[in-house]
Image: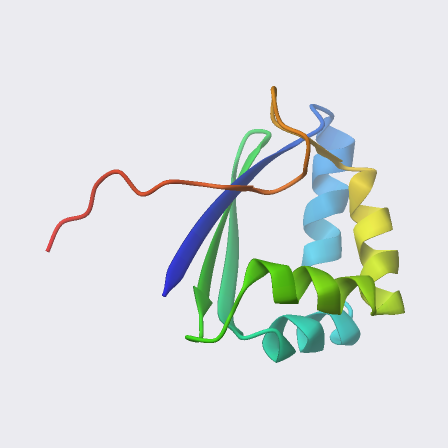
Length: 107
């Protein structure tokens, strides 16, 4: 199964460069938590300040389970706090990453 999510970065070239630098050296504990939650692969793409994340997940993956696992993991919480410095919510939303609706697919 595939999910796509979106989020904005703060419009500051220095912060965007630093955000990308952190993602070239994601902490091992964070990478392990991603794998343990049932995410098989994760990609994050950027256009200007807009981020687009693609998740390939196992059949037993759930966002609720992932959130509970993250809340119980001190290193993941540290990472999330660090990332808040760079990220901003999309207008009209109350949380960070927003799940996107698929509207088209070729077969």
